[in-house]
Image (cartoon, rainbow, N blue to C red; front, side):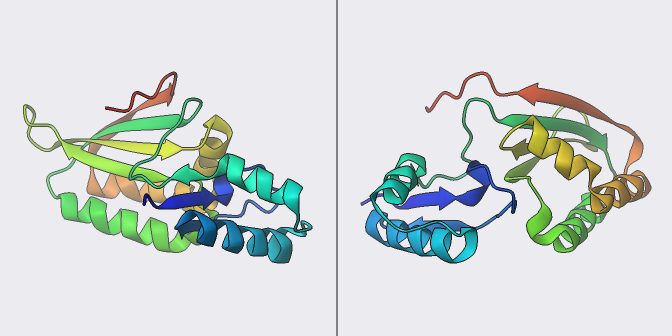
Length: 164
C-alpha cells in the first residue's frame, strides 16, 4: 500500500504550520485530525475528516503541483563544500520558518565550477516570505563569500506537472 501524506504547508493557516504527517492512510487521517484539533483549534468530525482526505496525497519525493513556484539559481564556485556548509547553516537557522519544500543542486557538465540550484515552494507568496526572512538575507550576503561573481536567478511559476 502506498504511503500517504498531509502537509500543513499546503493549506492556508495563520500559524504557517510546517507539520507533515505520513504513513498509511488511516494512520495519517487519525494523526492529522488530532493535530488539527490540538494545534489549529478545529473540531473533529465528518467535515474535518472530509477536508483532510481531500488534501491527502501519495507520498512522493520532490512533490510539486501546478501553481507551485520554483526558483532557479545559477552560481559559480570552486569549492562546493563551502556552499553546502552555508546551506546547512541556513537550514538550521531557518528551522520551521522556511517555506522551501525541497532543493536540488546540479553541476553543469559543460562548464566547470558552474552549478544550478532549483528550490521549490508551494507558491510565489511563500517564496517571497522565505526570501524576505532576515536569515535568508544573511545567507545571500554570505553566499558572495563562497561563490564567484553574481548568482543568476530565474523565478518560475509551475504551469504544468507531468508525472513520468
